[in-house]
Image (cartoon, rainbow, N blue to C red):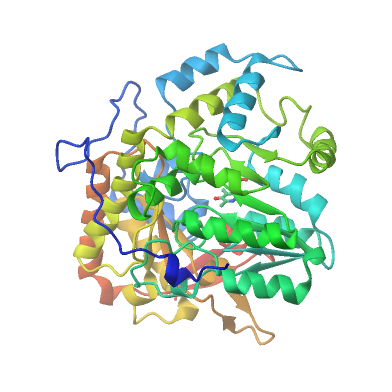
Length: 477
Ligand SMILES: *Cc1c(COP(=O)(O)O)cnc(C)c1O
């Protein structure tokens, strides 16, 4: 039976937190080590942004006050993780730290074959270079950009099939990250199961606004894949954050622990890739975990050639120690509540002052609709890039354009073929900023709201042939 997304969505219940005694959510940690933020003046920032050619990717990090460029690899590690770093066993083969990481990943995913890698995209390369190749088709709720790049680099095709509700920015839906299972069934029939490299469910759906995937949707995808004999892989970078949404929003999971919810989702899949730079709360690392021995052996051969020996991949012993500990800490109920609440807090405050954004708020970031924020700036002058620049000039906040700078293309006459949406992402690093940092971001937006009409767009003066958002140079239009 294939469930329609509308059948599996439940009314959006008000979350209740029986163990919370206060309305205000406090950071469930205190600060033992501090990292100085250099506060800059308006004049300094004008100079820095000019020097960076109006592209915040070209800024130096010590020119930034609040860095919301990405949540990847930017987590603060705990005292326990730092203690683990000291215990790291740097033996070439069979290190104790590897045994700890292998056990932590095995207990969580249920997969017997675990391959450590230096980050998520390396795990993607191991797997998708084996499964891909010309003529092969991969299907996902939304492929993350490195996932798509690895698949297309092998010569295969990557198809995105989010539920239709995901395309409506303002629509309230509890699981906007879901895959369209009717389309999945139709695509498998159309292409034939033997041409499908894998079905990849990204939880939470990063490129789709960090929106969660329901267990019912994962189950429906799993059933179809089993019936058709197609491999089902979880892109599990933010599976703990996803588990939080399931517990709060999906019937039948109220009394499960977050860890049990994640374990149940892993049981549905044939394997997973994970960038440890997200929900494993470390600055570098990743892994591939599989249930099939033949496939694991094929991937392990590439692992040893390109990453490192089978018991360390591209990682130091101390990195593996920190991953093992991070994978425990991330499922702590107080941590997850603080994590999702603090992201939502920023979204709610911005919405209350009239900032147009993707709703509901996802797990790791707030996405602003820059086209609605600056309706007078034509898309060809990049309203998202304009907002990113204004945020930096106003308050030293670094954010990321996800619009026509990142995904736009030019036709043969040099005219812009725009991206479907002009977004600015405010990604929240884990355990790094306090509520007053976030209030500062809201204050900056309040001022930007009042000055909207005066802001102008930008034009590109240099762009590289690929991934232009990283190194393009701009000037005011
Ligand atoms: C970050 C990410 C990856 C790639 O991981 P890296 O560690 O950056 O190489 C893959 N998929 C998703 C959903 C991600 O968010």
